[in-house]
Image (cartoon, rainbow, N blue to C red; front, side, top):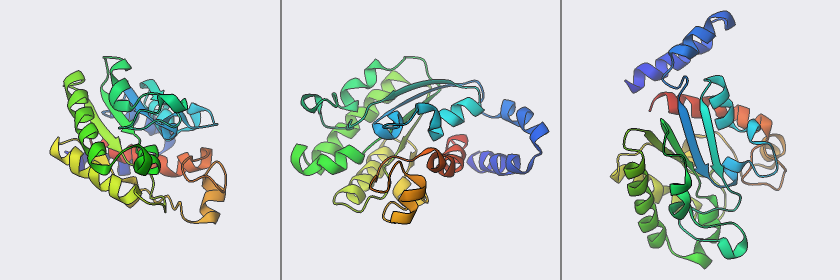
Length: 223
């Protein structure tokens, strides 16, 4: 089934514009409801949410789109005292109960703050609670995670590996953006073109979201 949907996506790219609307309407994404929760990757930091790859996918497929992104938010660690709110483990219950697709896009802040807020083992245990909670809340939805980009700082690679491990234990699909995104955070010229600033290692600009959108779209079509 996943191969079929990927083939469907690739074929759709070759179809003339006048025929694409019919194909969109036949897509498994069409008209569905997407809940997406996470950090500033989801909130889009200082730029409009409409510029994000997930908002554009929702618009393309006429989805109902609920964005629960919060700047500075962690999956596992409470940052309320710093103004960034409780962890996603604590606040996922605030999301609408009705959803066909539930996406968690986070981990950047967990990695950046791991050494002062907790440990990799604490992150692992909290992530397990999140997976269990999402499955209980959305037993019929398609749940998926996205890791952060490959940022050249401590803990990022290790944390993404834990995310893959735990999601695998719960049979939850995960897109490892550190391996497959084609987002080259370590390159200044790339950041200058595709990020919200040359010193930014987290937030894509409109052009960057367009660059990543096709890969994310293909992943979602294969769920």
